[in-house]
Length: 137
Image (cartoon, rainbow, N blue to C red; front, top):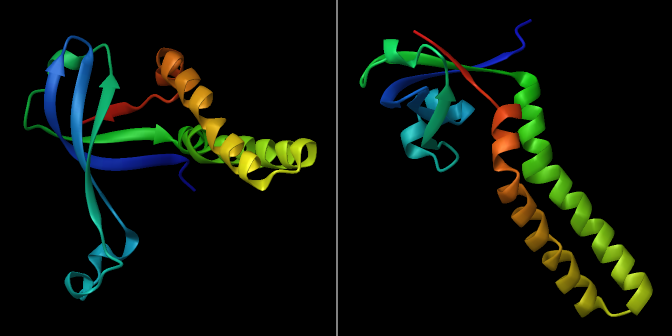
């Protein structure tokens, strides 16, 4: 069993120790024969930045593979989806119990996301190191 997430892509640019890779992220059903006739099938183009000490060996247009541990995927899901959901639910229940106002509880649960995403933005350098990718030809 592999504990790596792998995506094939094309080098979009190289800048110092950073390689920008363009990958096509597709849903599981995009390879289906009737995918062009189905709304469930979707493909998105993503740009991933990979920091590597041997960035000079990559050139624009090279076919590469971007790798990440599955733990990186779980960590990204935690910071992007699960933790904000937990914060919203806690804020909703707490404000509802304290004030009894559903409107204020709803606004508070949405408002809690503002400082959360500001903190994520301020800690983006630290998160970038924890959510890192590797690259191979």
